[in-house]
Image: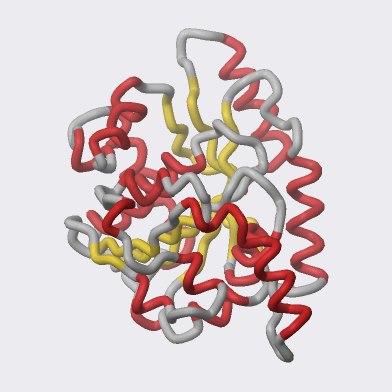
Length: 265
């Protein structure tokens, strides 16, 4: 059965979408079958793997409101082993729609739609990676309810731990209520500028706070990583020999190691 992992941080600009795209693509490069779910109304994860939003017929929005199943909305990307459940701007208004449906339809639970939608898909994938929006609303609640674990990306900058307490409270609420087995998969340090001492001080602070949960891999701040999405390519395709590509392949290996031991499922 596939492992469902959400990338979550209500703070924007921490490398969440970049990591969702590149971790998923790197897992696929390492031979895993991966479903990438875009839960951000901006749809940057969708375009970041080469999907033209103008050509999308069904999206995660349709899945969440019960208009179609996940298989119908899923798109095979041009990268071997990588599939995507795309997002469009429709997703921006879904909180109100889910609330209305939960009021008017018996048995409709607004926080469990994604979990129910993925029930039949889990056996078809090794990993399901969810890119959450930079907020802690109904969409993120759906992700946390559907997930086995979360990865928290944290930017190597001065206010790195700002908002983390609120995020951890949200995770604990999900554990107490809808998903008692939800676990913190790992904490990922992103956007490290190796030219400054501050970045390394933040690394030490976060390692003290989260201890062994912090991945050994640190994602550097690189121009190539910011360029790749505008070309609709993960870094492993855009510049396979770059430091960014190497970093995300190493992260994927760590994720596999933590979940599968020697890497053989």
